[in-house]
Amino acid sequence: MATPRRFLPSISALRALEALDRLGSASAAAEELSLTQGAVSRQLQALEAQLGVDLVRRDQKRLTLLAEASVYAGDIRQALNQIAQSTLRVQAAPLAGTLNLAILPAFGMRWLMPRLPDFARLHPDVTINMSTRLEPFNFLSEGFDAAIHFGKADWPGTEALLLKHEHMLPVCAPELIAERKVQSAADLRGLPLLHIQTRPQAWTQWFESLGVADGAAASGTMYDQFATITQAALHGLGVALMPDYLVEQDLATGKLVALHATPTESPGAYFLVWPEARSQDPALVKFRNWLASQAQAEDPLPR
Image 1 (cartoon, rainbow, N blue to C red):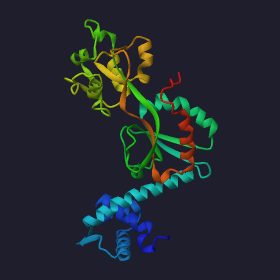
Image 2: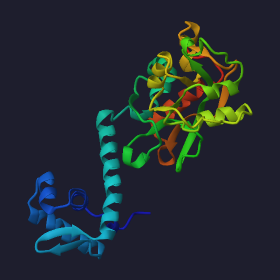
Image 3: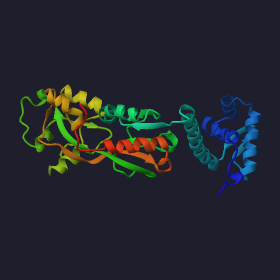
Image 4: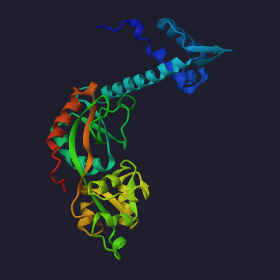
């Protein structure tokens, strides 16, 4: 069913509304849009006439949006961003397709990157643009087609493909425990614990999974990425609870030692996540189908 025209205002009028809301003045909006202030005012008047509602308060030639109009402008901002992202995608690869993918830095580097040459060989017509994101975001406002995400498959309005379960090991530099015995998980409570921002409950969950009261698990220094927390552990600053695939090389060379015999599975896992509305995007379908063949959680990583 076709959308009535009264619900589809002109892009120019919507851009004027969005700019006034974001910049706070008609003069700033006019400068950004390369218009006169009078032209901005006329665009807004035409929009009000089409919608049949007041959007702007006019006070001594100063234009400000009413509260309801500001909410509307926020929604329009997301829609305009999506239009821009879609247009860029078509211009960049009008025939083949482009996939804008958000990745986690450590997992993207160690798990995805070694596999991507195979995808490039099978699908040279698809371009993958990647940016790092550490936490979930609004797909509409960010303009991503999909994301590699750690957690549970509960991102609103999305579908997901399980890629890999995660297994954790407590590790530290050998010198940190040179003069003390660590024979059980409970012994770790007396050591400095290193935390990562994206998993604030990781230590508590690890202790609980082994039947140990977490004690001081909530204390300790905080790091934003696995790359930095690994360096802290290597330099003897404390014990890091790390995915086993990220520390296997340092364990093999003796730079780090494991303080528990076997890895324990995390409550979360790694997923490819995409908005339901984009599920049939050709580039995404190719990437998703290929990635499903790689999603063998218990297989060793490429060396």
